[in-house]
Each structure stands twice: as structure tokens, then as C-alpha cells.
Amino acid sequence: MRKIWTAGMRAVGFVLVALMLNLAPASAQELSDRAVRAFMNYAWALTPAKFTKPDGTSVLIDKKDRSKVEIPMDVAREVIKVGRLTAHAQICELPEDQVANYRSLMRREEAKGKWTEQQIIYINQLHLTTVMLLTGKIKLVEKTEGGKEVVIEEPDKEEAYTCTDEQRKKVKELIAAYIATEPKSEQSKAAQAPAPVKK
Image (cartoon, rainbow, N blue to C red; front, side):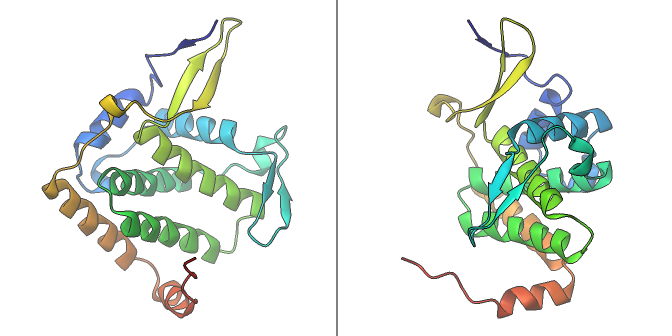
């Protein structure tokens, strides 16, 4: 029988609470290497062995050789910080800001031109994992035979986070500030891209 590992991510637990309660600039809340490594581990556990892109092509990820996919610690830390803002936008019911924040991150990383397709998928997964951890959609389950498993489930409505008008305003400001620091060439490419068709 499995039991919920309520202690959660010991290296990350305190940091998560602090991040959810405080909307100070990301630079003021540096994550320890240990916490970043924990986020990276959970993202790796949720990274699929095969990823199908929107155009239908598939990208294979060698789950036996993590070194080919992993990104440097400083990049992972930045992805987690952006994921934190995206999570705040989700909690504050700011879907447009949530999407804009995520897209700005991915444009920046793709523009660097140094990541493989597998690494871009991992960056995406690290961002998603951060959002899911902060919004309560991931639980860690301890197995009776030892080890831990990452399980995705909907959060309990009674435990749902809330967002005040002041927090909502602060989240919008922080996301706008982050997007404003994106290199202009990437912003102009995004502006020229056709808008998604609503069905």
C-alpha cells in the first residue's frame, strides 16, 4: 500500500511555501542548488520517452542517459523562477499572462540556438513541473518497496490557493517586467506570428 509522502520535498517544501506567500522579485528569492536539483529530478521523472510535436513528428528521449538532456543549474534556476510566476498567474486566474510568461521563456531559450530538441522538451517539462508543484497538482508518493513516485492529481478544492486583488496586480506587473526584458528581436517575431485560430 502506498502512502502520501506528506513531508513532501524536504529540500523544496519550505521554499515552495515562501514562494507562494511572497511575490518579491525573483532575484530576491534564490533557490539553493539542492532545491533546484529536486525540481530537476521531478521534471525528469515526468519527462516522456517519446514526445509528439504539434506537427505530428516525434522526438525520442533516452531516459537511460539523462546527461544528454539535462541543462545547466543556472538555466534550470531561471526556468523555475519563470515557472513560479506562471503558477502565480494560474492561481490568480490570469490565463493570458500565464501563457505570455511561458511563451516568453520558451522564445528566449529557443533563440539561444544551443539546445537540442530533447533539451527544449526538458526545459518545457521543468517549467510545467514547477507550475504543477506550486499549484498542488503533483504529489509525491512513497512506495512500500522503497523509493518515491511522482503522481499527478487534481488538488483538493479545500486546499486551493487564493489570490487577492493586490497579489493579482503584482503578478501582472512581474510578468510584464519579465516580458519587457525579452530581446526585442524575439518580441517582434512573436508579434509577427499569426494569432491562434479560435474554434
